[in-house]
Length: 279
Ligand code: PDD
Image (cartoon, rainbow, N blue to C red):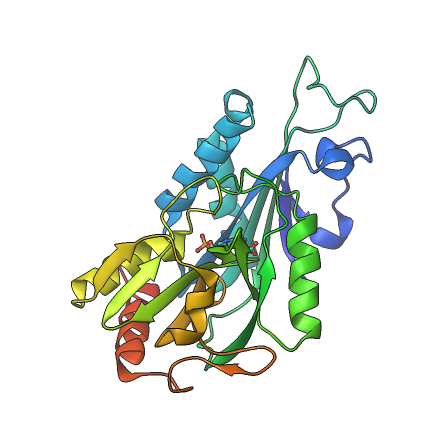
């Protein structure tokens, strides 16, 4: 039984109820976070909290939400669930309104939904990805719950046998539909710079630090999508998938030598140590 906490009330997710007039349901008017809780520790909590605050500010919702309450509800939910490792989903919408109206309601009563699903992190081996145009909106730095474009892209990728799609705008890599994207090339780790085109991933942040500490030259730069087949390795990252090596582009291109180089395994081990560390 998966437990959730809806507006401060903990119970089975199957029994939680929201109004059909909730603006998250009607308009996708809300933001979210996904956090990894591993070995009894919620990982990178402050980084997720900071990003959530930025997302709330970007949509004009921060004044209506107490993040102290949200995060203490998260701790209460975890305690009630008894889970040592879990995937935590946190969603805040602009709440229900009296009627369907695009404009913000005068009195906003946000809906705060937290869910703790049983999960444990796994380490994925080499994967295939596809390339697709980035058909999303122009504010991808906001972790918006309006994910229809991402859903369509991820479905297309999955039907093609790919773990995700590497997205490009006008020929330039942005990220993937559920993760950030990186290229290893001649001993350097490259990734597109932060902008409104991509999510400032928490795993991206951690990986750039770890890679620099391991002696990679870390370069945040525009990457032409045509460059991917000539890379030594491509990598995608997210809080739930961790670091995933991409050695093949669907339909039939091999990246680098088609296998995972040793330096990737070293970076992976460093990330696994951080993920399982006992502070
Ligand atoms: N997705 N880019 C996009 C578009 C994402 O949806 C995600 C995460 C990331 C990686 O961010 P982070 O390292 O902070 O998890 C990048 C989550 C896991 C999801 O939607 O389920």
